[in-house]
Amino acid sequence: MSKTENGEMRPDVARVAIDGRKCVASRFHPNLLSEKLIGNITHHQSSIQDQHLAVLKSIVEKRKRQFKEEEKAKQADGQLELAGSSS
Image (cartoon, rainbow, N blue to C red; front, side, top):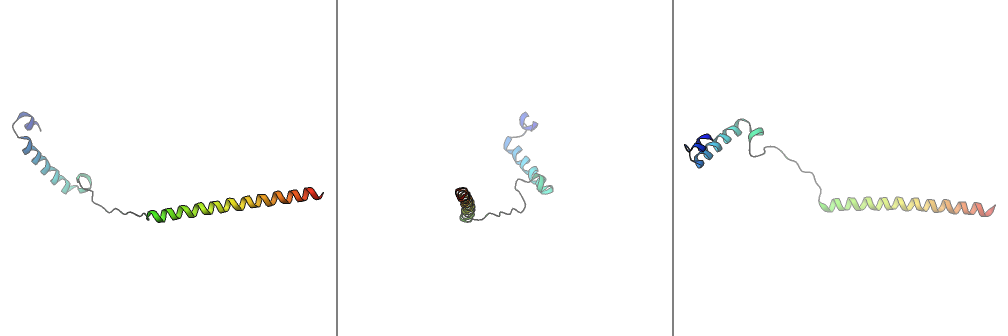
């Protein structure tokens, strides 16, 4: 870099020299110095329709549970009213 700053070496020649050194360095330590990532990447994502269907199913199940709880509460209130009116 100092040769380029001093004018001893043209910038395009210096760039080629640096790129060559990068290439050699990436050959010796590809995981550390490579410009490209080398490895296996796995992607496990279902389609958006499958995700949407799963969310809708969970919403329906939640509403069913809420409805059953409300029905049980109404029945309990009705039984309390019947017990209170018969005495």
